Length: 175
Image (tube, rainbow, N blue to C red):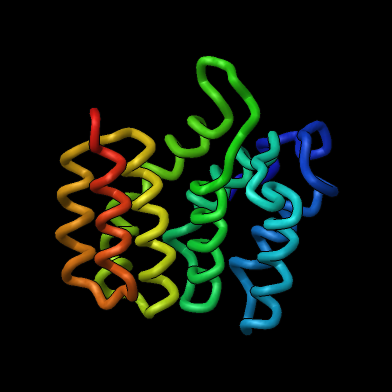
C-alpha cells in the first residue's frame, strides 16, 4: 500500500485527513476487534461522514482496494464496511467525473472478491458484499453484473436477500 503517494494534508475531509493513512495501515495490522473498530472509525469519520463523501474518500478507497487482498478475518469485515459506506455515500460534486463516480470505479475493481465473500464469507462479510454489489449494479446499470449478483445472492445465506434482489431489479426498471 502506497499511502505516501497522496498529499493527505491537502485533501478535504471531515476531520484530519492525515489520520486516514495511519488508520488504514492500523486496520490492516489490527490484532483484535476493538483495535480494528478504533481504526475503522478513524477512517469513517474522516473520508466519509454521515453518508457525505469528502475529497479524501477517493485516495482512501484506492488505498483500501490496494490492500484488500492482504486483509485478514478481523480487518476484512471493516474494510468491506468502509467500501460499503463509500459506495452508498453521496457527493455534491456535479462535475462530469464526480467524486462518487471515481470512487465507484475504484470499488468496481473488487467485483470478483465481493462475489466470493458474498457466498463464502461470514454473515457480516456477506451482508457488506451484498450492499457493495447492489450499489455497483445500480450505479452502472450493468445487466450482466445484475444477473450474476442476483444468482450469487440467491446462493448465499444473506438475510433479506429477496429484498436486496428486488432493489437491484428495480434499479433497472425504465432503462
